[in-house]
Image (cartoon, rainbow, N blue to C red; front, side):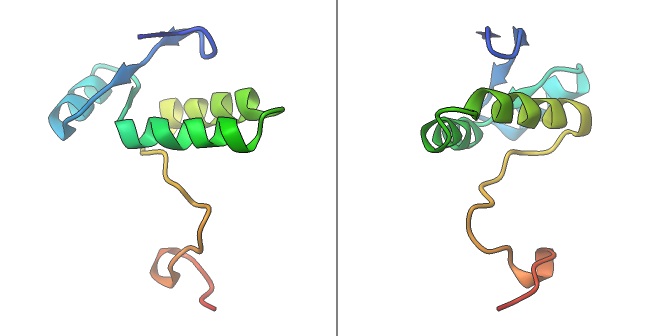
Length: 83
């Protein structure tokens, strides 16, 4: 689908196979769970969500990976400092 905010086509996928196929073709794809996180950012940050989503998309486009909900504590084995 075309994103006016991002100025390019993005893909919504349901399967890992589709995600990796599109990634190998240089496309940017999102799982539904990632879109929900972006919508939550829109709700939580009504004044700055556009810039935040654009930066997240750019990072995903350049580095790959998934949009993760990092609102909660980061487990120690993933780089957190424990508690």
